[in-house]
Length: 94
Image (cartoon, rainbow, N blue to C red; front, side):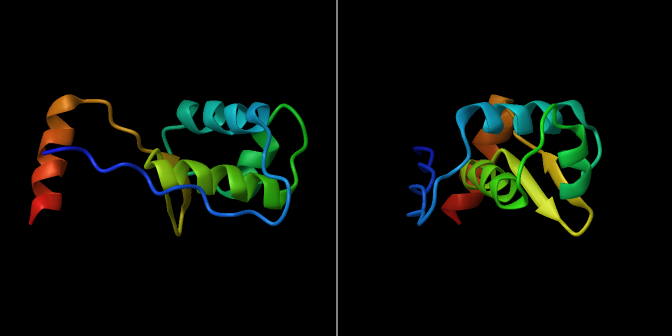
């Protein structure tokens, strides 16, 4: 079984987040053990980021399967354990 490739990025009608912004968001999310609201993420970033830019960065990581977003906020959920992904591949085969 081969792992499924992530969806291609959506067409954007405006400029997306910079690589620096994406890395800042990743750093904040990886350090947290609890879900963070968008406002909390913005307050933890080293510089100000527009809400739409933050949303685009989070959508980028959601598309890649690195974060999960729920009613409590956003949380880094990327699991690098190979055994975990073997089980996930069996789920997708059903």
